[in-house]
Length: 552
Image 1 (cartoon, rainbow, N blue to C red):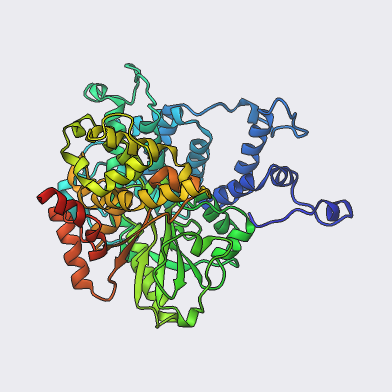
Image 2 (cartoon, helix red, strand yellow):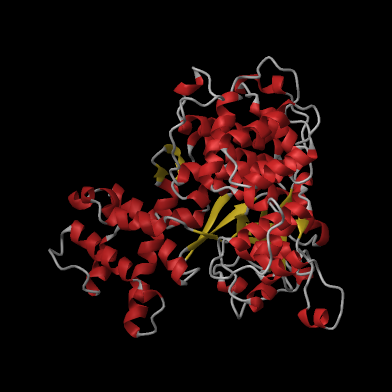
């Protein structure tokens, strides 16, 4: 994937790449990355060329100047049964047949999601029986020495032998991770089919199994195995710089999930002075980054994202920096969803930072508030607040008077429901956030203490309806269960369109205690066991006036 094709040099008689490779390079960098990915899994050039010719011939608008290799036109989409037979043969071998594995992976990657779903269904039906009596190590080659008997309650099925064989070869673990990503996509997109009653791969009992149940079991079994395979002790954190593999940099640009990279200058700033990027890797997936985190080195706790990645970002002298700010963390591998690798990356990044910068003493985040605006709109429009109780009590008499001065209420001045409706109208507008007029400034002055108060309530009391011990905010739940403390709520920390849409521009800082593992573990236990959100006095103070009004 790192080959660069120079058309002028080729015209002048310089050595040329094979015809098919030249065509692939002209199709763009994504196709070049596909070549590299296939080669890493072990595909020979003949498979790559066959795949390329087939793709070219399907493009009616751009007729291919090349002809397909003899016999290629006779190949057709692999049937679920044929793919299943190849999987079965691999499973039954004590050593992996590389050629057969190559063929399986090649065919599988060519198929659409519907065909993949059928093949995975066949695999799950026939090899879904328990291996509880087996003494083989299903996780051998996956970076762990955990035995099946250590997890007898999980009743690992027989198809785990196939996954073990796949994961034991170069590129195989990545392939298995992507299989789970496919299984999640099958569920998300509602893929469905009716198994043929005459299928030779079915037994009478297996015919009773619904495809959704089979796929679910496959996905859950892989999820369980990945929690062991991708345990913290099996992972490595490495610093990423602009001199790293270009494909790695491209992946980081593509998968940055929190603050999109706007242009090359933005990318340069994020890798520049006073900034760090760390990636998480598995020894058997060295070419594929699992997750990455951005870090800013600062003299104090920042309250806005522009102070870190804006055009006028503050750049501190690295040697004198005392604060490490984790301002974005993103996961790349969809097949590892639900595997807690994010906190592993933070745990491994801190020692690497301190090793080179011993002056660092404070470790915080600058985090978005993912669901605050959605929760607030729902709360303000809740009919249950019409009685004057509930969230209406968060508004003091002074708050109501200031809202009246903005002419929010169009109904009775004493109607709590009208006050909340007026506030909701202001929140929906959002024009006040970046306006430069005196009216916008006045609206911001009135809304700041009110919205910060609601935000503090959101963090301390709003819970996930599916689990009353978990915070409603997903980012907050991640940091709190890992022992962090809610340290600070920041007004208009991100006034971009995305920030306003998520949280009305509000951002927060979570504070970690990497040098006090005992206290960090206590914080985590209190949150996980009791749902207690540990917050600083500054955050608790935001609710103090509302609480005093309620008690009086």
